[in-house]
Image (cartoon, rainbow, N blue to C red; front, side, top):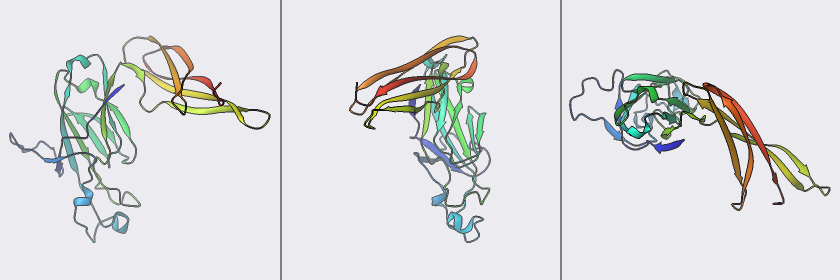
Length: 241
C-alpha cells in the first residue's frame, strides 16, 4: 500500500469534552507537529499519583485534530491510519464517527477509516488521548501522539500491514563447515475487503548485501472475503552461486 506521512499541521487542545465545543469560526488550537509530548510541558506536582516513576509529572485528556483531503480517485480503495505510538487510551474519530479505541500506549496500531470518508473532500480527523489514569507506568511515559502517524491507501485485496515475516528456515554447510545454502521462509497475511471471493498470488525478491537481487518463491491461493495467512519460500546460496 502507498503511504502518506501526517506528522505536520495538527491542532492541539488540552481538556476533556468535545474538541469542537464552543469554537467560533477562525478559532484554532495550538499548532503542533509530531512527535508531540504534552506531559513534559506541564508543571511538576509533588502530589502526582505516579510520584517518582513519572518524575512527578501528570497529564489529563487532550485532543489532536487535523483536516485531511481524500482524493476522489481513491474511491474504491481501502484507506487506513497507522499510528506508531499514542499515549494512551487513544480514541480515533473521523467526521465525528468513532473508528477505534487503543488502550495501550506503547504499541503501534492500524485502523480502517474507509467507511467514514468523503472522497474528493476534506475530512475531519480527531484523536483523543487520556493518560490521566495514574500511575500507569514504571517510568516517565509522556503523553500524546509521541510517534509518527501515516495514512495508507491501496487495493481492497492487499497484504496486511506489519504481517510480512521473513526468517531463515535452515542452513546447509560444506564439509569444511562454511555455509553454502540458506533456505528462507516468508510469511504474509492477505486481507480481502471486497464482497466477493478472489484468487490472489504473491511472490518475493530478496536483495543480498551488495545490491544483487534474487527471485524467491511464491504462492497462489483462492482468497475468500476476510483474512487468511499464506506462506512461501526460497533459497539463497551463501557463495553467490
